[in-house]
Length: 249
Ligand code: 48F
Image 1: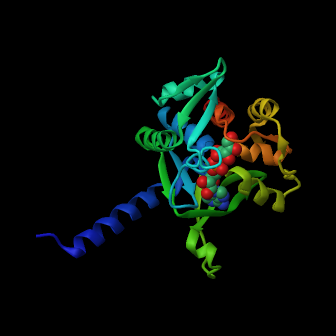
Image 2: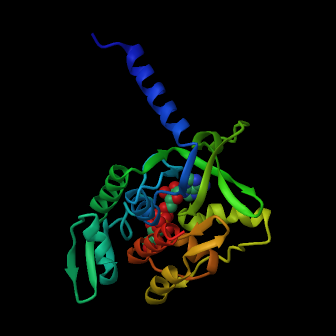
């Protein structure tokens, strides 16, 4: 016979065990947008212990709505290998573009990241970082609803060798480091210029402070790069670049 107590205990025991296990990770990714999911997937695939902390309930960040809620996204041909790696369908458009379905893209990135070994903790907000001896050593977490209603509840900590800021326009982790060190002023992204934006976002992604890496729109916000709108190759490639840099350490 099915028991209420078993449902409750099953959830509490399993989640608590996992959270405990992930209090110490190789890589803590903040934000489950396209850059965070790609970076997390590539790192987990190579055997790294990766947790992604996502403040919303649904991972996927800015993918779901495509452009102006037309739920398609554009990917330039340079990033085709990422769509192929994740087995995401696309339709060629002109010579340079591929069009993917936003719902397929988001759900497949999430699913393949999880299956590669990434542990996604949703509904958890990163509210601070651990800095020791001039290096970021972890993240300070709390439940999103606690943060939303400003409850006076102390957070907990996850220790990480590397922290990745994939928080998009928030550039949340960089802002926290900027508050506490002389590093990392966040300039705020510039006006739209797709070609320049897509090139620079990849070029500029990487380690910004010992232990802290930036990628995706967070990079654009930090360096005041132009915005690019619903074209996602730069998000994938910046996540890939950061994952490769970490693996090379
Ligand atoms: O914004 P988002 O999708 O980040 P991204 O990987 O991709 C940007 C594109 O979606 C799009 C674009 C395309 O070219 O311009 O905007 O740079 O996802 C960022 C995620 O981080 C979460 C947020 O809820 C979102 O899902 N996030 C933000 N701040 C925090 C956070 C925080 N403090 N703690 C946890 N998650």
